[in-house]
Image (tube, rainbow, N blue to C red; front, side, top):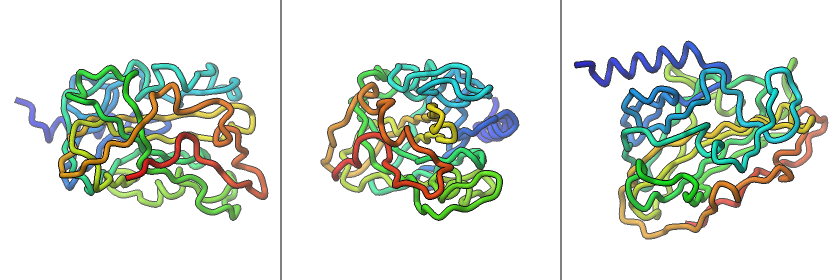
Length: 264
């Protein structure tokens, strides 16, 4: 019988070898390691599988602005929920209220400046059976433009959540982004969705959107269940956070897309 450890090593090797822009190929929740491979339904994982493929460059919303981005996608479509044709993985990971999840990204391209946002949605039962279009997302974390001081040589911009802070946490398992689960959240089954928006073509009318989803069982004694929004209501092409020039000098203030952080 093939062990989970050998599957983990195979998945890690495969994804590191084929990742073009970036993915979350492993994650750790409350000290336990999990596989995060997103393009192989045969591996037991809490990550949602999708059919974006190894060369996924993000869902575009806007006009085609570059040779690698020939198709303008809308962020309101169902395929932008956790990835193209996304569906839950076979497993559910565990995390405690107040606990942490470390998402291990592949190294993020140096010109893909943008925010990182993390949402949760209550599955109201097993996440493997949920209709993703009915999930109501509330935001638990966001970070965008951290410092407007211009830096860099080839790609000159300020300091952003991605790629600057993300790649600053690079280690043997990748570039790690930590998410803290709210202490007072009610226990239950949730989808945790962490994502970034690459803005390097935003001044030409296009953004690239990278969503990644994972099924979790949250334990604890909290009672808070914040209201959320279905995916089609989260983002709009006219949002200021999608219409921003990351290469301007000086940089303007940046407004992170989506609803405000949920109140706990």
